[in-house]
Image (cartoon, rainbow, N blue to C red; front, top):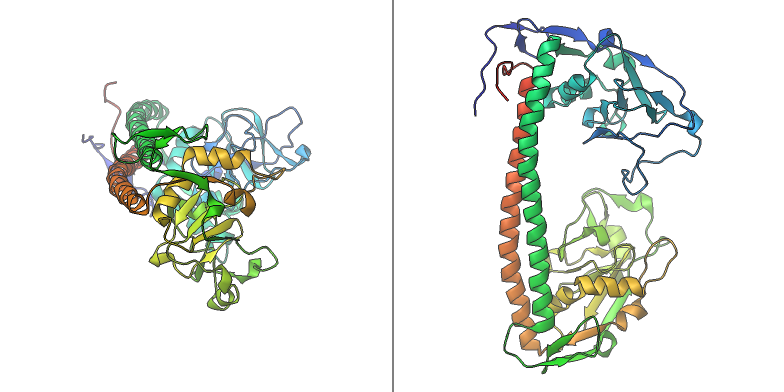
Length: 441
């Protein structure tokens, strides 16, 4: 759907804004807001500022907060905010770390609080500042040697120029965006539900294949394990320790130090790098060849199964030739088979089952974080089909997973396109590139 443009435009005189509707006003932020430093009080909620969602409308608990956010116990240091204020994180403003305040509360003393001078539509200003060109402009106004050290001080931010429509148009634009973005958000939600359903279906296919086999007519027997149920009669059930295998934990802190990490070196694989049975490395979590050689006993081999030993237990991944030579991280364990009685691909699929995660958690140790010992892992009851059948099951899962991956990728592409459309629509409306005044509801 195409939208009309305004009949008349003018040069805004501001590079990032370009041409704007002739009757809109270009103003400095400092003419619309003033910086305030008002001390909060114990009764007010502490609000968070997210680069994606702006300012929260309530105090979030620790599970809801960004893991990089720390909260001081001394609430007297926080700044009070009121509805209509504009708040931004000096270090993350250029990434979207700002927003309009909707409830009375407090924010971090490290944030800048800007209070409207008169009747200023702060939510409209927030939407304008979230447009790609505005975010880049805030980055340009920020000061620092590198991106990670950039700070947007008030003295610079107040000189940023923005454009505002007349008050009646602000209402029309807000109503239009509420209506159109709600439609897009509903479509995005549908695609996300589809991705979740595909994930559930994929897990169900894997679970059935590795515990019941591929032959629906195979005679069954009681496995003797309550959470496993029946298995094909010709399959065996025995603990992992009955196999010739190596279980080795990753290096402890005394073996690998923070200053030894580099960018673009040999990847170190921790539980967060295990995604859907595959390894997804982080280019920031790597070490030099010299460090990797010192820890050569932690190097991974093709056919290994790398396993989470703390945190989210049950995460695991099969190591392929691509990952050979990478290092097992501190939170991980290597499971290496030394004989051909077990197919590594089948093993990794079995160990990643949801019921296996529950099993490991029930036997975990640790008062703060779930932790799995090698002894517990070796006692894990395993289902053992004939080796040829294990290979067939692993190949079947590979084919089926590829189908689910394709459908998931299509759904994610749809989400990406919808979100791009949403961003472009908001940007066009709040910068006056489209005229929505006369569009019916």
